[in-house]
Image 1: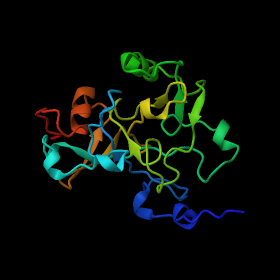
Image 2: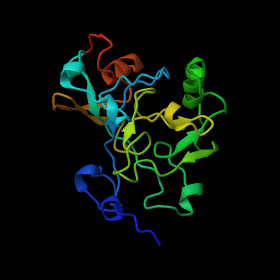
Image 3: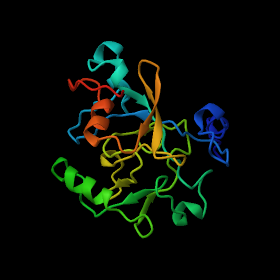
Image 4: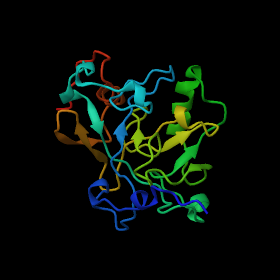
Length: 214
């Protein structure tokens, strides 16, 4: 039987990676990195990318480090430690990634998809991903990267199981908002009432917006 060489690291609880408000301290990640606002145009616009070849330097952050988000927080999925019955049955409004209508995966269907995700009923919607943020070592959306497609404290969604075109929202279970780390090092509590256009502008590195989180 093959033993995963990274299993020890994957299952190691790093307290600094987890929200202190969580009662169960399983391994995982409460503070994902920002991939930006996904326009489905094949161009990442956040400071962190899925592809190692798309490294971002400080000189690339033309919107300024004070007004560009590096990390925020999200609610981990209800499946805490690998495959289990909870993988298919448990529901978390902010921790589970839900399925919207199928075939909303193209650039032209982005707005339709986001509207469908805003309207999702987490009590009845089909579950897509229930282990969001469980393995901090795994790169990519739903594992260690989130995006600014929807406002803070919105449910996360995909269409037709297409992970790369999904929406993975920041949020928390300890108030209406999320702690957010900007690239200049300052941390700010961003309210869920933050205007979506402001939130998207803070998520991108070089779109030329003049935005201050203050």
